Amino acid sequence: MKEQSKLYQKLVIASLATSLTLTIASASAYAEVSTGSKSQATAPSVNVLELVPVRTVAEALGAFIEWDEKTGAAKVTKGSTVLILKIGEKNATLNGKTIDVGQIVQIVNGNMYVPLGFINQTFASHIGWNNTQNKMIIAADDYAALASSFLKELNQNNMDDAVTYFGSGLKQKLPPELLKKIWLGPQYFGHLKQQISAQVDKNAVHTNVTLKYATEKVPGPVEIIIRFDKNGLIDDFYIPPILPSVTFNKPSYDNPANYEEKEVVIGDGEFALPGTLTMPIGEGSFPVVILVQGAGPNDRDATLGAAKPFQDLAVGLANEKIAVLRYEKVTREHNLKVALNPKFTIKNETVDDAIRAVEFLKGVKGINPEKIFVAGHSQGGYTIPMIINEDKNHDIAGTIILAGPSEKFSDAIVNQSEELLKRLKSLGKPTDAAEQSMVMWSSIAKYVNDSEYSIDNLPKEFPIPQQAYWFFEQRNYTPAEVAKKQKGSMLILQGENDWQVPMAQFENWKKSLQNRQDVTYKTYPKVTHLLTEYDGVSTGADYYQPSNVPLVIINDIANWIKNVRK
Image (cartoon, rainbow, N blue to C red; front, top):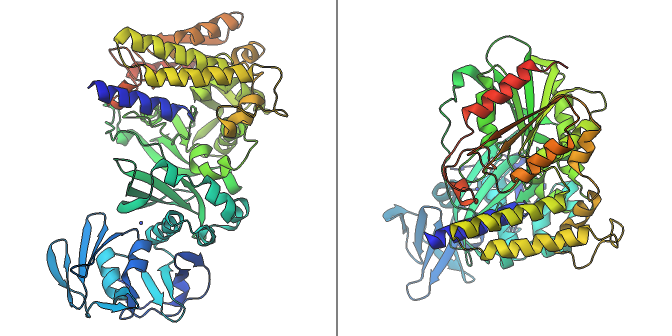
């Protein structure tokens, strides 16, 4: 248990620091691939009897191949599929059972060949082969094969071929030489080996392929998400942090009879975001809450560990006839494109999309445009005064700060680190990872608070170089000080068991806003940073225990909203 707890601490701290049976098909349905590279060239009709090289095709589909020189057999593994092929034999073994290959397994110029139709049937793929041009052909709708083939090129350091999968926008931003620099797979998890699974899903913006691989350096599976645009080209890709596998339990108050959910799009263009609008059942002009996430590349549910606080809030508030809008954060849906912007700011990350969400809701049937509220959690709460200032048309009826820092960001993260260290020591828990984190955050704060440096003169030794501009651009922003000069109904909620945003931040809100009469404050003794209750001392390890937002928080938010008069 001690080692498990230590692992959880490292994982939590690390996650917070950034805080994929064809017969014959028409040519138009395919994209050509030469050793994996993708183009829009017209493909010939596909002959399923065509013999294809096993290694080239299987590896492009994400399979891992082991060759036995003595027996002349190849073991091809992809997920739960294990295929054994033997030179000179017409039968193969598939998951322990004998099957007919269709033709004798052959060796040509040192490569093992089998019929194309056999490959498609075995691996449920939609590929073809142009023998004249030595090109593999992937069906335009076989996203799993396209994503797997792309990753094969990355895995083999074929960056010129890899970029041919990109849409025009990404291709301009990420040429082969830059892709080579930012692809950190070899350092992070080593060589990709067996593909464990491939899952395809669609949201309102992208077709997403989630691939899981066994790798050289990491004991558990590595997950990589490849995002395709509406033209079937790669628009972005993302590697989520490796965290323990846990199960989310729906709250007892989740009553699907009380709401319906619609997939929506927030904003447009290059950085459009997919979202979910949870609408109460029935006719009416409903109040609505926009949920704004905290630090890091969060999903629309604000998932962390076994908790999904934004999903809980959405279904809970629906019971009170209050609609909720939540959306994927731009740093998750467009993770790579964001990383390629050296002057990305917190306004770009959080504020702009919140304002776009407000504008979107004004035109939605069933929503009361006079009752649009914005609730920010953690970093999202920290930006609430920014969001208010950007609300030029005064469309926001009120704001909610959920465990939001009140002081400068660089100082708040030091405060966070100090609180975690104190809690770990009081429990007799390992502190190595927390102490290392403390050193890093303290160093960041020191640089940010040094007047020698600025956005035009960033320190070369900054601990997180790619985020230096982000930190310095906002260094003079103190949320509570900005909020002093604002007006409008505000609700500030804080968990007393929160180590990420300790009670000192809440007390600073109260002190700074003491002269305002339009602010309501609430605290909850057992509530952690994830807005869930924990009986012990929260240190982050508890995030991996199934929990939900307590009903008292949902009721307090609902009652406050019902009493706000714009």
